[in-house]
Length: 375
Image (cartoon, rainbow, N blue to C red; front, side, top):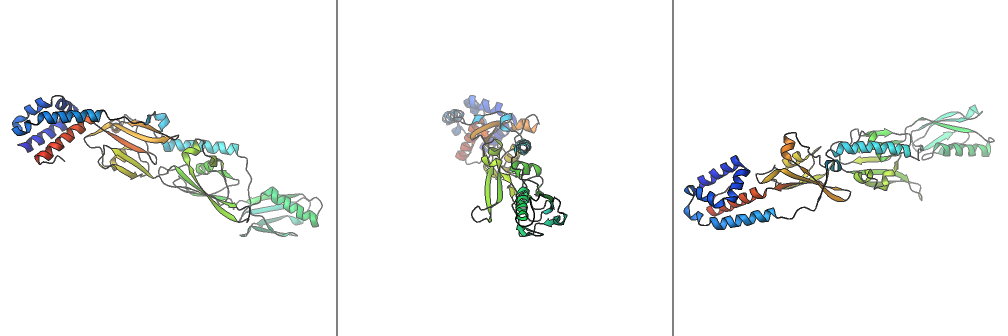
C-alpha cells in the first residue's frame, strides 16, 4: 500500500506542479489525513514532526543570502559577444590605421628593388634581397639591407657613391615586389592565412584582415614578434599574451604594438564554462563552438524537477567586476526571450525552487525511512 501511495503522489506532482506543491505545504496535515487510507497508520503519528521539519526547511531555503553579484542589462552584458567583438575589432582597426605613425616599410629577404641614380643610367638596376638579407650593386658590391627602410638605404648608397665616384648623387629606390613583410594569423579566426603587408600593422588591423574571430575563439591572443637585439644585432622572439577585452576597453598599452614581417598572431580556441546549481551534472565544460546557455545546460544533463527554468543567471567579469544577467529558459525555448552566448570563464547558475526542493527532500527522507527509493 505504501508503494502505491508514493507512486500516486509522484504522479499528482507531475500533473499539478506548483499548485499541488503549495497545497501540500500549507495543508500538510489535511493532505496526509486525506491520503491516510493508502498509508500506514503508524506513519501518520509522525506527521506533525515532519510538517515542522518541512516548514523549517522551506523557511531556511527561502531565506538564504542573496548573491552579491551586480545585476546588469542586456546592452552591458552583450547577448552576442562574438558579433559585437568583431564589430569593435573593425572599428579599432580603422582607428589604428588613421592614427598610425610608423608607416615605414622595412626591407627583408625576397624583396625586389629598383635602383635609379639621376643622370647615371649605367647604375640603373633591379636587385632582389637574398637569403642573407643582402643586395649586390655595381661599384658598391655587397650591402646588408635587411631591416632598413628605403630612405635609410638611399642615404647609404648616396654616401658610398659620393665617397669615391660621384658628386651629390641623387639616388631613388622603389620596391617592385613586396615579398618579405608577411604576418601570419592563425587559430580561431575566420580566414587564417599568411598576409603580405607594405607597412607595420596593429593587432586589430591583422585580426580584421583575417575576417575577425570565429565562434570558437577565446578571449586571449598570443602575439610573437621578431625583433633585433640592440646589443647583439641578432633577431630574437618576443612573446606577448593579450587580453582582448582589455585591448578593446583601452586598458592595454600593447594594443598599440605595431607588427612587422615575420611576426605572428595566434588566437586559441575558447576554454571552459562552469554550470552550477540545479543541474544534474554540475561542473566545468569545454566550450563547443558558439556555446549558449541552453547548450551549456544540456551538456550538464539538463535541469531536474527541483530547478527553476525561469531563473537562470549568467555571471561574467566585466571591467574587473562580476556582473549577472537573468535568462528565462521557458521564454528562450518559445523564442520569446534572449539566450546568452557564453564566453570563456562564464558561470551559469540555475536556481533551485525552494518549494520543490523541500518536497523532494521530504519524500526522499520518507522513502529512506520506508525503504523505498524515489529516484
